[in-house]
Image (cartoon, rainbow, N blue to C red; front, side):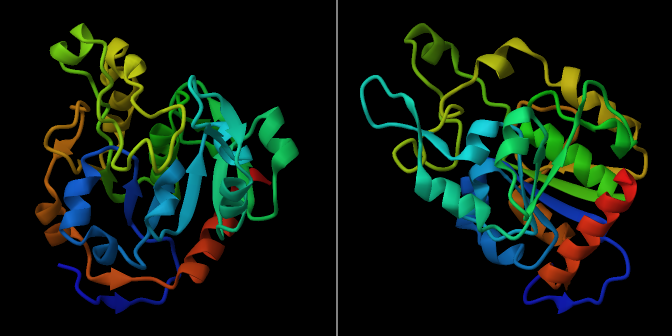
Length: 261
């Protein structure tokens, strides 16, 4: 179990990665001290998770996130560019995201853009498999970075569905660990994609990786392809090692650059 942890000099990228998504199940982890437990670990932050967690790098798929668009407080809400949000993003030390015409135009020096692949591939030069979901983009990249050997903890990968009562009453589900009032974006309350598509369509491809153990840290997640555990179990399974984040970021950047040459 990680307490203060031991800082370790690195020659290679660690074989333990924690990915922080946005699902409401993360609230359980926060209440149990998740932020401190993963401090200076190898942590990938998806989208708005960087507002609340320290991490190694930030990932995104949607160009609107990267350009700083949020929903307005008007009725009905509209997407408007929030300069404060954009400024907060571009100050993050390392960002790895989806390459599109829009993101190439917006790219700042702390950002690496990767092309997408429509199917799962181990070859980064062919793109990153993402299926237009930042959680899949992040998981694919994590597998590649650790050379397809190690363990990955998925936090906030809820794949949220509405209850029959919510569907009948046309109510939104609680999809994120933060509130709509705090961060209002397109994904808040959005469950249509998850309800219409089986998780196996997108996640079963990772099961071919026999040397990677993927833990889904939510007993109630609708993603059934990986072993489900709770946060106390995750804390027990974490290595008692922490890393210098700048050193780790340099290893990651150099590995990606070499692969794309």
